[in-house]
Length: 114
Image (cartoon, rainbow, N blue to C red; front, side, top):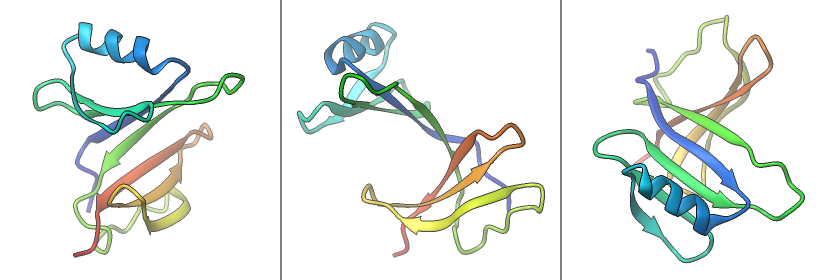
């Protein structure tokens, strides 16, 4: 079983308001926000963009999450270094972390077990 493309992009920001306005100006709509400096944006049927405000002094990061249809059925090729196996997340999915040949970490997201 292979991945099914990009599920979401997780983006850290130092200024939630400015970043939200930036993406809205580019055509993204805010789908979910709890008023806590984070939210989920989407442009049409495209990939989710999850934005989270971080404290000053910390370098903002970006994480790309690839979609996996079934965590139990996924068997990574030996060319894929698994850093952490699938684990339940606080946002209702299962996540595996893998490392590419250049040392970048990638998130693999699968639906939570029913």
